[in-house]
Length: 198
Image 1 (spheres, rainbow, N blue to C red):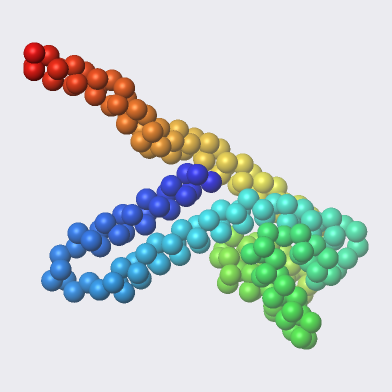
Image 2: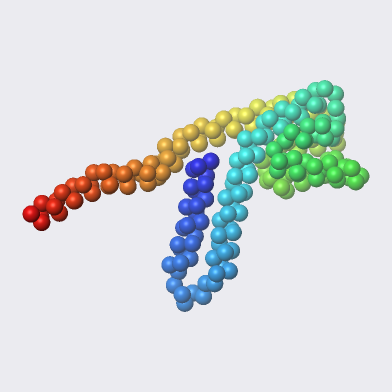
């Protein structure tokens, strides 16, 4: 979480510094700077949302598999387990279930998930649609998707673990360099200046 906040503050600082050093004759206004900062923050929040979704998706699919294996239809299974989803996924599935309650067909309401989260949920939606329209068994498809999602999450965790030393390098340098300067360089400089005044 600290590295995320550090990255966010660094991105905001770069945008502000880049805007401050832009030549005045370009005609940049404070509104342009605010728009650039909002764009950076929006891109960062979208990345964070997709990362959280990738992390929580295998558990969500496993919950749906349990509900389907217990004998529920796909829409009923989703209705039972969606309160236990990640908040963003919960809001999207609540929108799907609200559309179903209004009389829309379950298969026709599902594309909202793909529109909201992108192609990550496309296989899941395709499995639900095939089960609803054609009566195909849903549990084997979802079990395969859950296994793929777990493998994807494991690869992401491994990648983040490999990136950790690089991410910790900046805080480490920022924290240790001032201490090194104060404890090693400054006393030497003071001793040198004191010897010059004798």
